[in-house]
Image (cartoon, rainbow, N blue to C red; front, side, top):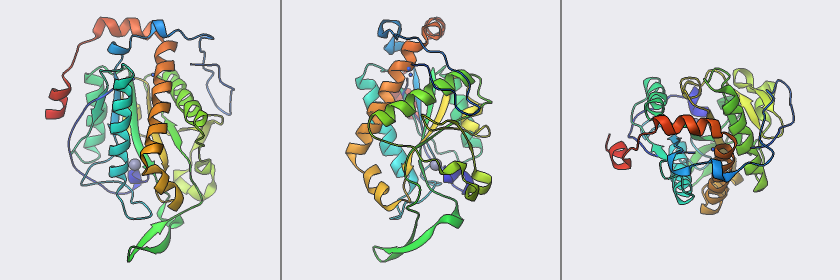
Length: 289
Ligand SMILES: [Zn+2]
């Protein structure tokens, strides 16, 4: 997320897919979400349900830097690739994994436009978190001065109330948060703190760790339910090591698959719409853009 308030730039293109269910406690400002008591996997047609996985940032404008100096983009790419594969392995084989070389702000609009053109059913932006510059401390690592903050580990999920499908976005955010927590991962509450200044956000689902962030382009320009996942803090020196591990990526990927499965099962009416407009795409074609 930090990259959203830092500069950044350029790269590639595309592929992947997804979605889930349960009645949530109504937190402050939270919209009530109705879920079927017994989601039926039979209503979810995985092969036609398109999840769009957006790799946050670009090679040239890579977002935040970790406590050990690794660009956020590298974390985003590796995790997104694992999520993409996990979804395909689970039968969501029309998943689209998007990479881009177009810098912001135009690149942000293009990400959403591409998901709209492909008529994705669900949009998930993959990021890794940092903190505002004034909260960073310095340390020496590998002979270089780096920046860290060990106070705010944990994931965070963002949705925009300006998204075309607010209820769907809230539902998927809830399902994703619950799936992450079922795997022992907790969210960070620090976006509610006054020390976050202009980056302070409203926590709209206190159980699942979902924040409201209306101004995120990729969330409000998309026509389908959309969330942005900050998978964890890469400026936290311990969590950075965990986030770099295949085991953590596997846990997060499994949580995404669970959330997608439940979302897909919870919204059979949207599946009917999707079947009418569904058009197969070539993964190779998307990559070649
Ligand atoms: Zn980011």
